[in-house]
Image (cartoon, rainbow, N blue to C red):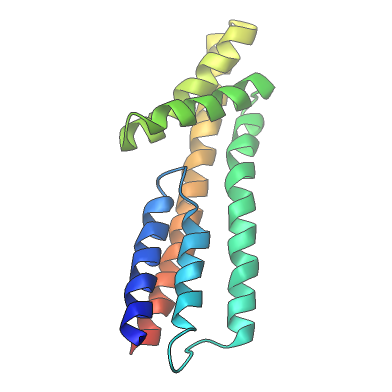
Length: 157
C-alpha cells in the first residue's frame, strides 16, 4: 500500500509544480496534498506542527497569488480597468499555451487601461506592473512548491 501512496504523492507533486505555471491548477495546494498523502504511509514522515505550518504557508501563498498582480498593476498607476484587463488577458492567454499565459495579462492590462483612458504611456506602465506582479506570484508559488518537493523527496530517504 505504501507504493500506492508514493505514486499518488508524486503525481500530486508534479501536478502542483505544473499548477504554478498554469492558472487553472492550484499549484501549492496540490503540492501540499502530496505531503499529506505521504502521511498515510506506514511510518508518517512529518510532524503535526510541520503540516500546520505548511498549511498556513500554502493558504498565504494562494491568497497572495491573487493579490500580487493587482498590487503590481495599481502600484504602476493602473486602475480597475487594468486589473480586469489583466484577469481577462490571463484567462484568454491560457488557451494560447505557456507563452499566452505570460503575455496575456500584459496585453489585457494594457488594453483595459487604454480603453478607459486612451493614454498609451499610462496603459503601458499598468501593463508592466501587471506583468511584474504575475511573475512575482509565479516565482513565489514555484519556490514554495520547490521547497515542498524537497521535503517530499527528503521524506523518502
